[in-house]
Image (cartoon, rainbow over the protein chains, first blue to last red):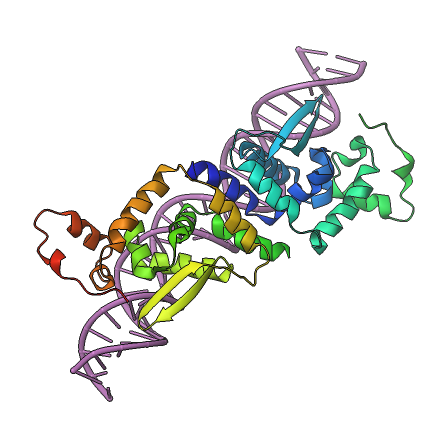
Length: 141
Length: 141
DNA sequence: GCATCATTTCGTCAGATTGGAAAATGACAG
DNA sequence: CTGTCATTTTCCAATCTGACGAAATGATGC
């Protein structure tokens, strides 16, 4: 039981993973969307997501190549709901979280295909003047 | 704010520190009592206690040479109360916590002077057959 | 079946964390 | 003021963690 508790406690004891929790409060996200918002390497994001899923904080859904994560609404880890609730009540006014949410709005406006392989760069391109390929868009699945 | 949150989250993301939290649920304890129950080096316990106090989870009171810690009833860290409440609701049936509590009963039966300098050994002596100096006792402050 | 794309896993590096011994510090007794 | 005791701090070694690049894996399209 202590080990189970520690698994979740450790999962929230990192700023990147807490940012991911706060991002997912607005709903399910694709790995590439989380990667774009956080501006980290895909491998790094994937590792964090995996650890949070193992801890019972997240649930995963695969749709073709794309993998989606969302906050767990039921968990094998007894303590996950309590930690999710705590995190849900916290950091409402945090500037980093606010920035992330603004970036998420822009990321959500982009097709996944544009984000993948380019991550944050796609986001930067979207803002850059004269971003020629920003007219290229595909329907989100 | 995120940093403040992380400070507390990290403080509870270690099994030893969670055990300390659960021990202190029954009330204020002296450093040597915590050290005796946990069977760790005084330096180790002191470091954990210090980190938890910095995180806002504990409050400290000095009485002569003896230093007492208890759960914080008010904290400079906004998130400490929520984490304390969560930990308070958790691990009720955990065997490690149950063992700690049993050891605490025996530790509380011993004078502080017997515990200090001997820590867990004093506890072991108290159980050993023919423990000659177990009759030596002083009033707890 | 091959090429491509999205994601995960592995290996590496740098930094952080944990436990403990020893030294330092704070409080008290004489 | 000195010695003793309790606790904290410093230093060290070992382990863990987070970041990333590269390789591997899973899914899809042709």
